Image 1 (cartoon, helix red, strand yellow):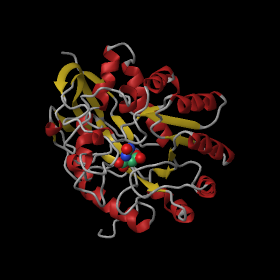
Image 2: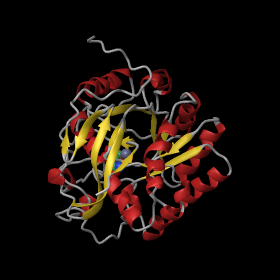
Image 3: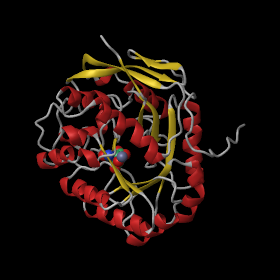
Image 4: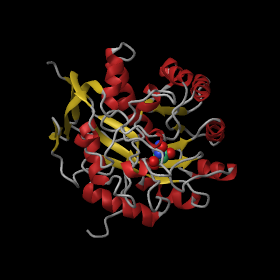
Length: 365
Ligand code: NCD
Ligand code: ZN
């Protein structure tokens, strides 16, 4: 058995649910899942309860993260219809601004062009700006960012027309980057599914929706335009997914790299493709700080069967339940210390650091 030693994985898109929905996940379980999946830095989305759109909400999230996170993290601020000035002022304390231009889970959604333009103009040009956009709003986000003279990152691209547009924009030198999730690379709306057991439609709910086989193949065909693989780890519990109004979202931190290693085994990807899109590009695009003596070890041939019961995420299910995957992270080392090893997370809550350059001082200190 030869272990591969690789740079640590970084995820620019996770939902850790705290504050407000810790029955789904919290800073402790979410960052334990991250370490088990090989991640040492995760950037947490602001669609919590309350949403992270002002200083008090940001402070709530920071306080919980400081006490509970086991790996390093950043916290996004959410763009709303009336927080342009507040958002810009809080920028140094965050990892970026997240704008929801399409249907999502939670109340953070911006529908009007004026708000989009105002945020793009005010948010500091050197800070990351990530957008949930689908279809025509992808075009709107790219154009408005270009006119504002700034870069924009398009989250979880899922469709052929979107990736073609982004690719064309990149070829013309526009400052646009994008991420794709493993579920959009491996599943379609028609995948006759082992997708979670018991198989209920609610388990398939995710935003953006699983698309067609043509969309999925287009993502692979435009691999060169995909900057990052991000999980969009979005845990919801089994009762929620099987209930009358199933919320959209899949957990993903503990399966992502194994799924992508499957594509290495089938000749679709190289290990370098993975490192580029799960470490190097993410560090560059999001300006993430170096973590000294930090790396992962992967057993590329280890076969294992996905069992949500054995996972660290609190949600209790996985879209890949029962599937046998080949390749797994066996060790995650953070700042010289083993943080995860063969099924056991040893990094303690509170050892994770905020990547923001200027975290708001802890009032308890
Ligand atoms: C996300 C969630 O549950 O927070 N759901 C999802 O389907 N991806 C929200 C989002 O990223 O839009
Ligand atoms: Zn998301």
